[in-house]
Image (cartoon, rainbow, N blue to C red; front, side, top):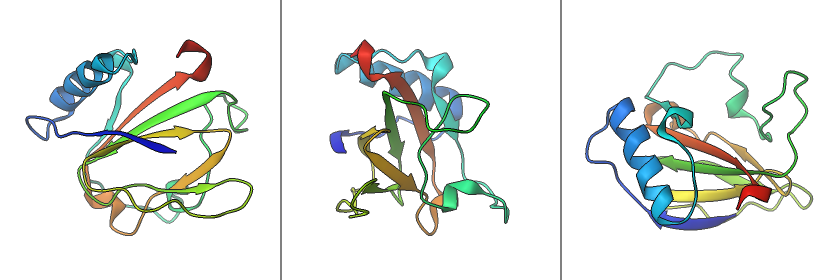
Length: 130
């Protein structure tokens, strides 16, 4: 995991965040169209919410972690927790507004306490594309 940059959108609005997040990533040579940015506003949690547990992401129906994915996560506060998948050692906490690059093969992540009270933007790219 590494921090790409610290970033804030001009407004906390789903369409604006998606567009500006996509533009910011493009300045770093990463292509994620605004239509593919998943923006999650603050929300209520359910008992079944899987993001509260350590996990890797999948973009397939079978639920197995998808290989060679790079997750690009931003939140305005309560940054996502990240740990090494093998050693379970947690990375130092990111700052509010940090854009995280997370290797889905090497890392697991989870929503922190209070994570449902934040704005979150998610971009996913294949590491082969970079």
